[in-house]
Image (cartoon, rainbow, N blue to C red):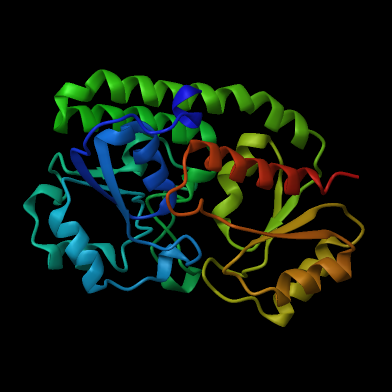
Length: 289
């Protein structure tokens, strides 16, 4: 747990890391300590599905030694264009300077047909694995290995910091599951909480979106009310989601609603990540009778 709570070690930043999201930046910061410098491309209060490639992204990527991405097509709408505009061969796919978190773990919801009629689906699997702390620990260990190939002198440092992050998440795992035990179910706006629900053993009983990435319709919300009437649960949506649908459903069902950040803040440490998971677990547990 020392790497989660400790201040950065003294020294000069060596590996220039560009992370696509603040959660991936958190991992790089937690594993790399002062041996890395980090730039984050996606603001934590924006939906990373729908960004546009910007010149500032290309400038950051042009200087990068390592690109740390989520993968599973989460950034497909903007990252390939930003990489192309950066003209940096070090961070091209297949090079040591290109790292995708999805390639380090098993994803859920794989094998979906890439059909736009089914919404914003991800055939490679659900990309929101950062909501599963155990999977994030696995990604941290893999990232430590990759950083060690770029900066061999700090290989042991990276490995020890990744191990400390993994220990911190595993230490909290039993308590998170205990808090959520007996929670009858949760409605998410999008499928971004599914990893956490599976980790906790809490059923996902519906989504505010009728299809991934499709705004809720009145008929879909009425169908949810009809199907879930008389049951217990909680409704969770993100800070960049509109409130109308979740609040309507909450009023009709008498369920609690919670609007929570999906990402850690910029410059977050591992402690901030654990606090984010704490928030979501408390909200999910709040649906218990």
